[in-house]
Image 1 (cartoon, helix red, strand yellow):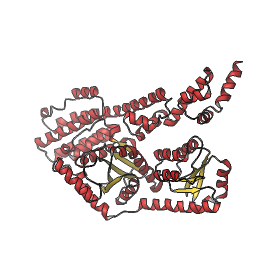
Image 2 (tube, helix red, strand yellow):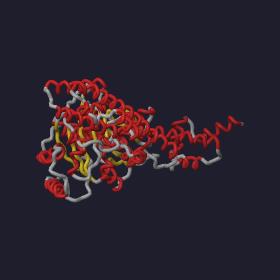
Image 3 (cartoon, one colour):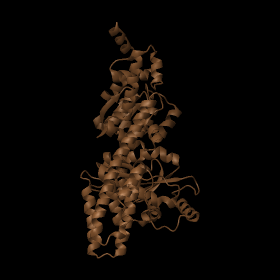
Image 4 (tube, rainbow, N blue to C red):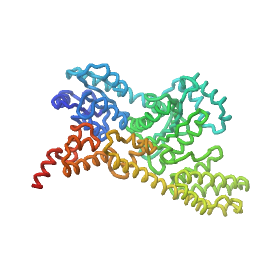
Length: 532
C-alpha cells in the first residue's frame, strides 16, 4: 500500500477527493492533506509519502515551487499535478521536476481513479526495476573500462597523452559525449546494510543504484567487494546541483523499497579520468566513517579538509588501522594493532619489513590527524609523538607499546576534532541565520554553499545539535523578530514582513499565526488593549 498526501487550497474539492475515491482499491492510503504549498512541504518532510497529489496554483508556494523544494528533501517521492490550467509552460516545468502525472480539472472520480491506477503501475515498475538485476551489455563494457581505472593504483602515468586516450575510449563506449569537454568526475561507493548492520550488497544492488542515478546524471558503475562503485560525469555545476539529491534518493529508495539502510561515501570532484583512482580512495575513506555513525551519506569534503594521503604507499594492514583511527573503537584499534604485531612476530618479519610497516603506519596516521585537526593541534601531537625515530626500536615488542599509545592518542584527537568541527559548522550556520534572516533568499542550500559543506551534512548537524530543522530555526527567528517589531514599533504589517524576509504579506501572516496562534493584527490589538 502506497501513501499519499493531497494538497489543494480549495477545501471542498480536496475533501471531496478524499471522500469519493476508494483509495484502498487503487493501492493508496491518504495520510495527510494540506491547504497550501508551505503546509504540503512540511507534511512531506514529516510523513515521507510515496506520492504527492497537488494543485499547481496555491497560496504562498505554487505547485511548481513545491515540486522544486520537495526534490531537495524527498527526491524519491513521486509528484502528480492536478491543475485547472492547460498551459504548455506548466507542462514544461512539470517535466523538469520529473512529474509522474499532469491532470486537468475538472476531473471525475472515475477519471482520477483510472489515473491513480496508472500512477500506481508506474511506481510498481519503479520498485521492480530497483530490485531487478541489470545485465545491459553497455554497462558491462563500461565496467570493464572503469574497474582498472578506479581500482588500480599503479597506473601508467597521468600525462596528457594518457588522459586523451582514456577520454577517447570513454567516448567510444558512450560514457562521454565528446573528449576535451569541461567534465568533472565524482565517485560514489554504496553499501546496503540490514537491521543488524550486516552488509547485504550484491550484484543486483548495482542495478538499483543505476536506476536512481540514471535519472539525473551520466554515470557508469559496477559491483566489487561488497560495494557498488559509481563514477558520475558532469559539469561542476551539474554535480553541485544534483549530487546531494542523488545520494538522498538512493538512501530513501533503499529504505522504502528494500527495507534496508544505505551507506554512501562521496569523493571530491576530479577534473580528469586519470585522477579517478584517488577519487575512489576518497569515497571509500568517506564511507569508513560510518563505523562510528551508522548508515547515511558521508562526503569526504565534510570530514577531511584536504586530500590526506597517497594510497600507493599504504599496505592493506596500514589501511585497516588507518580506518580504525578514523572511526573505530579503542578496543577495535588495539586488537587490530596487536594482531598485526603478533603476525609479524610469528612470521619472523625482517627488520626491513618491520621498518616499512612502521614508516607507512606513522605517515598514514599523521596524515589523518592533519586532515581532521587544526594545524596547531596536529603539530603539537607530532611533537609529543615523535614516531619518526623508528630506528631506535630494537624489536617488535619494543615497538608495540609505543605504536599502541600513538594510534590510540591519534584516534582520540580525531574523534574530538570531528565533534568540534561539526559544532563549528553548526555554529556558523546558526550565526548566518541570526545575521541574515531578513534575506528572502536565505536557504539551507545557500548557507551550505557558503560554508562549503553539503546540504545533507549541514541539515543533519543542525538537527542533531538543536533538535530542530533549518526551516524551523529560520522561521522562528523571523517570527520572534517580527513580534518585537509588531509590539514595539508603529511599523505597518507589510513593512515588518519585508524586514523579516517575507515578500508576501499573506504568507507572513500565515506563518505568524501558525507559530503564535494569533494573527499579527490581532496580536497588536491585544497588546494595545492590555497596555490601556
